[in-house]
Image 1 (tube, rainbow, N blue to C red):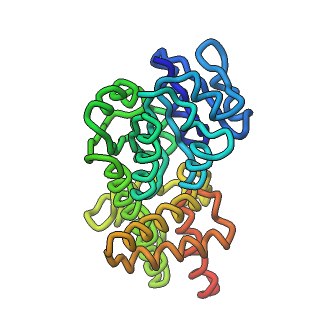
Image 2: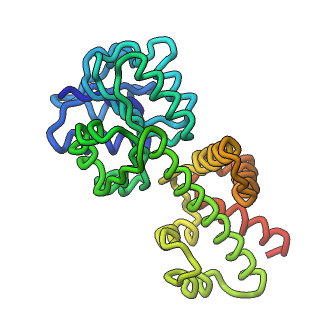
Length: 294
């Protein structure tokens, strides 16, 4: 089985490396070739375009930043979708909205290509350790065909249903992550405004039912002010916007998410866009400190 991988950013580069660690040879493409260099050698070759890559593979993984990037790679000039062989399998691990996944599934079917939406939960460290969770929307036979490959990169696979269902649950998960982080930032700002130290707040809140477990792993970033990206804030804002789009398409009201995504947008304008999404704490808490003259 020949495997292709397009998109070698924070997540994709680590996922591709884990496929190689399990003995798989890859053909890779990334707009910036330098990001592909660590993967090149006996088990990795670089292709000049998505189209040329597609001609060589049976299974293609994409891990790209947003729907526009996926559509360009698939259907744009030198796009891969018309160059995959009949019965090849395209696995899109990007965080996109469900209606977009269904659109791509239809485009793939027109070309006799099988499609799987398989976005992941987990940031840079779980990606490196092969501990991602895959949320899968696919026909059962297609999932079983790629299950061994997914288990090279993750330790849990949830088959959510047919096309678009993997991206549907990913929308729900990231809505919870984004709003949870912003709510924690606001709570910390209030606590400090009432005279509690940040250490007291962290020690008292983390590990209690009031706080999402993932926030414990963000303590060091928030306390040190070192927001090196594990999951960039701009992509969290993008995912919350896609959740809002999905809610509109489904006739569901999500006012809390709509407000929160705009807070992330303000944080982007404040220069936090490429930082970890936990930098929403710096934006919220720091702004309140300035207001108090602290």
